[in-house]
Image (cartoon, rainbow, N blue to C red):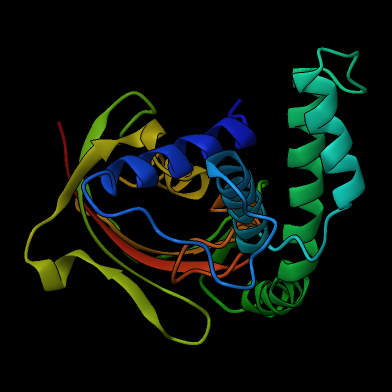
Length: 230
């Protein structure tokens, strides 16, 4: 599991290293607390932490407890959470924020899927994956461990297209188990030569996490053409 604070420090360190050949940045005239390099570095680290978690959607932090945690670690005192507990706590908290942000998108997606499964020709698996058979091929049926060659295009509910291998003029090769769960399941239902239209719920795709330009909680709609099992 990734640890967030070391990532912050690495990012700041890298940024500073890239600036080594430039003159030192002087603190602003009204930044009187920054009396030396240690003060400036400490303040910069605080900016890095705040900016990082702000970008994750965290609206506020208890700075008193952040200060206590830093002091406990640097003074080698007993910390209130071990590394695993700290990482799990961060992940749980960010997950709740993501879920709250994605809630309107999830509600819209669930409403669409409820109506979509009623349409003639739409099939629904036990996982919640929905698909239409636009063309049924007669070739090999891939397994989870196979590598396949596909053309595809993907869009959101509003019709915005976010991927299209046809436009690139080049199909994509990948392992069946190496993609999102909705694709892994669907590909194993498709003989070579098939074209399926997939309606993939967020929990079989990217979950509640934003993946630009895909908002967290989105249903993904794909048209997939299975060209070859390698």
